[in-house]
Length: 477
Picture (cartoon, rainbow, N blue to C red):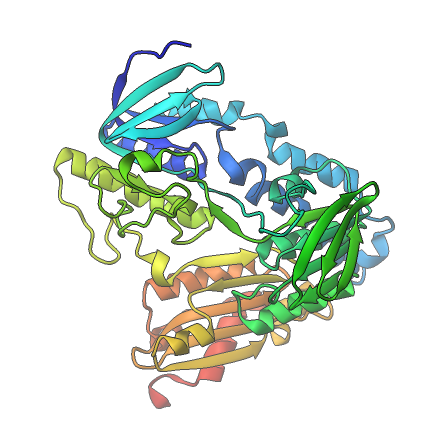
């Protein structure tokens, strides 16, 4: 097909996932003509194959488990989990994998959409190839923003690629449940999908060459491991996968601890930036590389190229990517208009929180909610810290929510400054606790002042009072 004539706009955003959408929204609000380029569904990974469908799959089993743990409700629960109904509910959250609603939002926000695969083809220039082979060159007067996200990493294990493994996409969009599932990897996807498919009745085996959920506090990971094992999940840690083979009956996995067979295998060994076929070589960068940025999300060495979300490797979480997107969109608009740039720490145009105030939730049962460094990381940073632990099950609100509630909480305090720098909670429905911790960390609220933030009784939030009591009264009293 013949190429179309070149077009020029103020800003080109590559990738119409949640992060790219937020960048474009902020630049349009800042008065800049913006187009967004997408070769897949508008809305991206989070909307169709990650955050939303995975949490929809996890929620029903968790609610059923909670009901069975509460006298009165337990007697009313007479049936098993309706897996087909859970899958239908999941489909509703993905809009049946239709992006018409997301496209409508772009139109209402004044954001232009170009369908096709985008590649950087020069300074401030993007070439888009449509499905029919036609191309369009788009020049950016002010900025090009790469928001292409990440893709599942398939480990270099002999036979694994030929075995046609599931990735997180297949695991979250499946319309039937295999009799058995082997999961290679030990991160969040591995833990959450083990939880889902065990609840659905599959025999699940997790094979990890290190531990499970190694990035969180060990006491929290241990509680999740114990819970998964109680559901029948076989967890093999410290085990190397040597080869994978697709057979007539499923897959055969050879490890240094023996052979594992399953109907399907899920590769859940992390993610890598989606920059392989982006034209980075045309501007002197390595294809497939992480795009390192400063705190205004501008790619190092460029005054016109920005990277937001997973592609910059700062914090591979949707909410953190959207936070970056807001900062990037606003700073692009400010620079285009010649306005002052507020790039001091915690300024309007920087993503300071990426360094030490990143909240995350692992939506297993029990959940893990954490923000800031772990105790080990805090000590390794050279800070003088105090670690305060408390049994979450001893809090009145927790014991009322579920009989036999088991959970734990940890607060990490920088003793030199008298402020909290990290917190971890593990237990049923602890996700909502992490925002209070995040607010205290970002605001650098002194421990002495936190005593005056009185939690309502009897709520699970009373954990804050208990942690402070363990820490000790303010001013040494």
